Amino acid sequence: MDKALINRAAVALSIQGVFLHNSSLTIKSGFIPQFPEAELALIPQYRAGPSDECNIIAATRSDDGNNFKTVTFFFVAGVRLIDQRLLEALENQPDTEADAVYVEITAKFAIHYRLADGEDEDGLNTAFSEFGQFNVGYHVWPYWREYVLSTCTRIGIPPIPIPMYQLPALNNDKELADTLSK
Image (cartoon, rainbow, N blue to C red; front, top):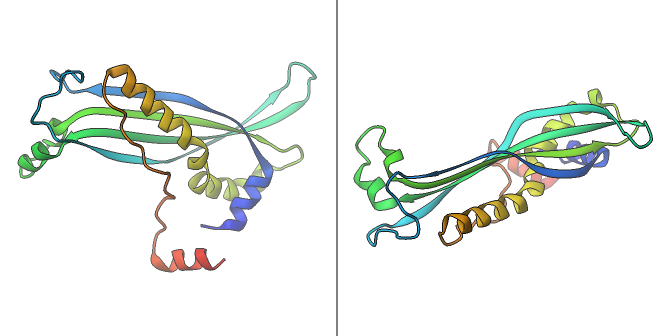
């Protein structure tokens, strides 16, 4: 993690909005969430991270005709409820993990940032990459938590707790030490 690059991008960008780009909800066939089987031991599994996609869009304001640029990043998150006992029972059988998944919620978010006037996006590509990897998740996370809460409510299950946002793991301990010393 290069804090100088992240700070460079943060100075050049101002958040405009976080938008749901696409999502999916899957409930296991035959499972009725409002009437779960007593022997189920459903536990959550989580995944989340930035996409490598970053788009720069040039546009013109309709009210004053001025040009501006928007930088869009994408972030993907998912949670699923699995029956831990069933997963363990099927452990030695290939391609059976999906049988233990009872509910899965996934979402891809598009995060729009306004590029400050006079900034040259070509000189910021490396900074944008670093910013996308380490900062975008902070902006998305409240929207992801709300999305999971409202989806759980709509399907009639107790809210799945979404933990606090965690930075992506750094590649090695030396990189972590270098980052913490900056």
